[in-house]
Structures are given as structure tokens and as C-alpha cells.
Image 1 (cartoon, chains in turn purple, red):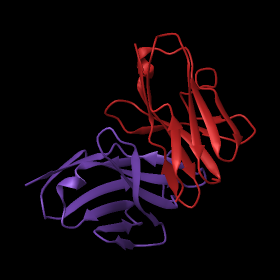
Image 2 (cartoon, chains in turn green, blue; image 1 turned 90 degrees about the horizontal axis):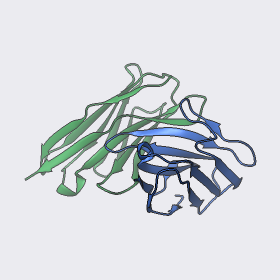
Image 3 (cartoon, chains in turn purple, green; image 1 turned 60 degrees about the vertical axis):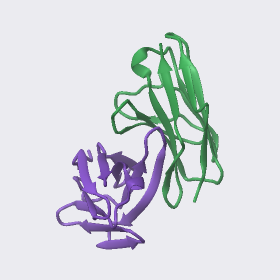
Length: 111
Length: 111
């Protein structure tokens, strides 16, 4: 079945860019999602990309998809302390309409 | 975008009892899902809630332990039966329309 992997921790300085990486195994995954979870809160959908796209930009967020390598990244420009959270990558498992989640990357933003 | 609400938001329960969690979506969604997020972990899919028929359970989850109902396109319930401390988790409802959204979660603590 689908497997989604992420690095567990990222620390950046306020104002720098953050890049969170994700790999997945199912080449037939149709949609790939990024969710944000703040402490004690639910999941907030940040953005998603369809598998026939290479890039999607939405304000400070840029998603890059390398379908050949099955690699997805989320870039946050001008990272702020309010961006501190856990970021989950998720792949819509092709043919099953199920979201498979990575373990989550904890982003810490320091002054 | 769809808004998903869950009740209760949190509960503390005694071992051996059962708790039913309700999920309401403010618009019709094609699919509804229930996920579990154990402390410090990622999300694991429990089952797909099917309208008017039995839910489709993932490996490791069974109907006797997690009975699910979905009487219409916008409402579903998950019951956690005969609870033990190992069931302490956040339980999240999710709906799939144009995008996949999540409810705020129900934080369950079993003593």
C-alpha cells in the first residue's frame, strides 16, 4: 500500500524560508495535500496539488511536485512564529479515495 | 469549502464504557471518513463511512469495536466501544468533496 514519509523536525529563523519535504510510494496518487496542525487544534488544509502539476503557488506557500521521484515539497516564504506547527503531507491513494498521512514535520521558528 | 463539526469536542470516560461521536458536515460530501490520531502520532484511517450501508474498515479495525453509521450525506457517527486506556486518542471526522476537510477532532481520554 501507499507509504508517505517526512522528516520529523525542522528549525528555521524568523524571516527565512522553510522547506518541508515528503516522499510517497504510490505513483498513481492523484492528489497530494499539505495540512497544518497547531497545538491542541484540528487539521487545517493548507494547499494541495494535482498529480499533473509541477508547481502550485499560493501567497507565501509554494508546492513543488516531482512525480518521477515521487517527491513533494512545501516552501513557506518569510516564515513567521505563527507558522510554528506540525505539517502533514498526505497522498490520496490512487483508486481508493483514501488519504494516507506522513508522520508530520514539526516546524519550529525562532527569532 | 466545507465546514465539519464534531460533538463532543472532548470527553473523559471510564474503562468498559462506550462513547458515540457525532460528525456533521455543512454541505454534501461524496465520502466521509474516520481517523484516529494517537498522542504524538500521525493520522490513521479507521474506516470509510458509507451512506446507508456498512462502513469499510481498514486493517486492524473492526465493526464490533468501532461501529459507524452514516444515515445521510452530511452526518455520521463513530462509537468507540468497551473502551480501554489504549483508546485514548483524538478521533477526527473527514469529508471529501472537491477537497478533503477535517473536523476539529474529539479528544478522548479513557481512565
